[in-house]
Image 1: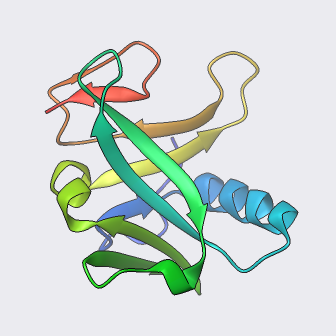
Image 2 (image 1 turned 180 degrees about the vertical axis):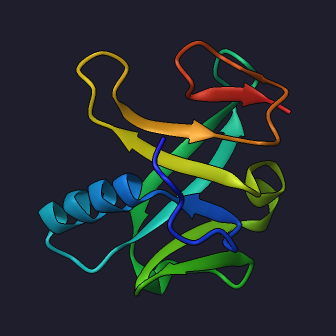
Image 3 (image 1 turned 30 degrees about the vertical axis):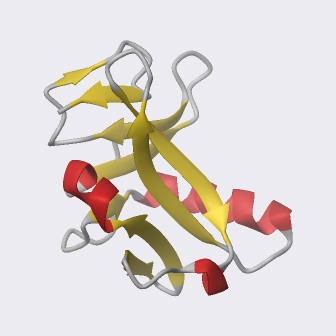
Length: 117
């Protein structure tokens, strides 16, 4: 895992994670932010959500984390489960992709996309 870019954030993006998210956003051709959250489901009880969102859709109950102008947003209910989350990206052929390291997870599934707290 690479070093998180700003350690004071509630949701941390590593340099590789930020680079990959910015590359994906550029393909969208719009100024978008990243929404991160959780929902019930997945192998371990809760699964991670991650999608682009229009900045005008940021709600009053969202926490916003700024990475040199790029915004990561998370609703406060999800943030209870995600505070301190490190979002990294690994380009390995096997096991690559976005990786979630969640200090609040008591158990994580084998694929790393769901957890229990």
